[in-house]
Image 1 (cartoon, rainbow, N blue to C red):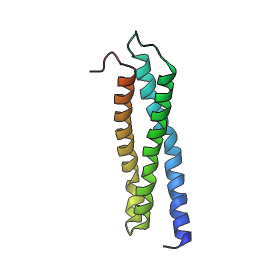
Image 2 (image 1 turned 60 degrees about the vertical axis):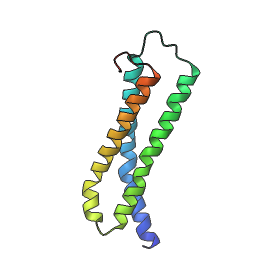
Image 3 (image 1 turned 120 degrees about the vertical axis):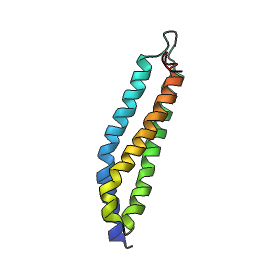
Image 4 (image 1 turned 90 degrees about the vertical axis):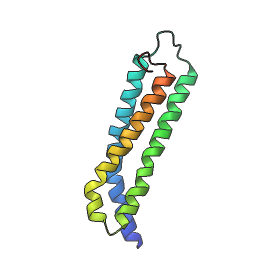
Length: 116
């Protein structure tokens, strides 16, 4: 693989994944906000909660960025044409995983009343 091919694959990955990052973050933020509004009534929000949400948001975006590794490897393979058609499946898997993690972390952090 030469530098021009790598540049093409990287450009393709950025064009695909970065617009989806907005959707990804919006969904995770929605889950977190839902958990916050359904929190235990006696919960006192502190600066530690804000730091916890920040750390989790950075972690969730780091997990999302791992998609680039899989995408670049698949694009460099002889299955590139097929991969470009099925990579939305990777987005769906990453989003489902992160959504579940976000719910469990936020529900526990905010002591959601309906969480058990």
